[in-house]
Image (cartoon, rainbow, N blue to C red; front, side, top):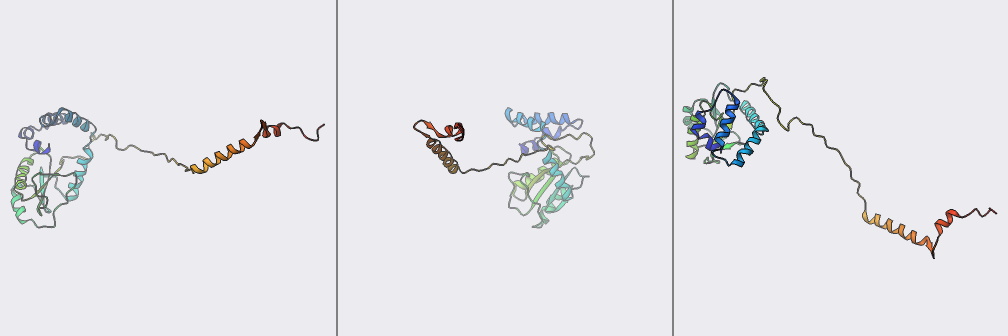
Amino acid sequence: MFRQIAADRGFVSSIPTETDKEYYDLVLETAERYLTAGRVRLLKFALSLRYYSPRIEMFRQIAADRGVPKNCAAVVEINGVMTCNPGDIDRLVTSATSGSAAEVLQMDHRHPESDASSTTRAVLYAEPGSVGFQAFHDQLGSLATQRHVDYIFRPFVRDYDEADSRRVRLSGYGVELQMKSTEYKAQDDAKVDDEDRATDDEDKVDEIEGFVFSRLSSVKRNPRDP
């Protein structure tokens, strides 16, 4: 679905900038064109739980570690060299050296027509719908279709404020989980059966022809008594 939305000109050209609620409504409205009703409900549930928030934060930290500049709307890294200008892509692809390509992560969005074995890897850090995203995406998608690059996309929220007071808690995160240690003592079933059988045998010997000797011994009188 990501590739379809990224290529949806109507979605990209109408990204709202006023409120997060408008952005949320637009995402669901666009998703309804590509997903079944059941999948749309599942998407709403995932968004309400902020299921993807940790992944977005992970990509933000990866971008910071890679040295992605925040003053660019979109940044592409081609084998270790970064640029904010889509016009530099062809030159960087031609001059790319092998051995310096970024590592591909399991959560990365790889263009379906990319050549995964290509020694030239282009990693785009951008926010879908942001200024500059479409120009990068179209050009890199074309190169991936021609099997010239391995095109990877990573969401990157540029306008992120760590001191933003609107931060909320994530469902299921920060919860203390305590496990009670329970010990189980193993018993030898054969030994238990033998002990039960021995007790039954003793009970049988204790009674002879109707006389229960254990009962008699408990009530017998002292032989010295008159």
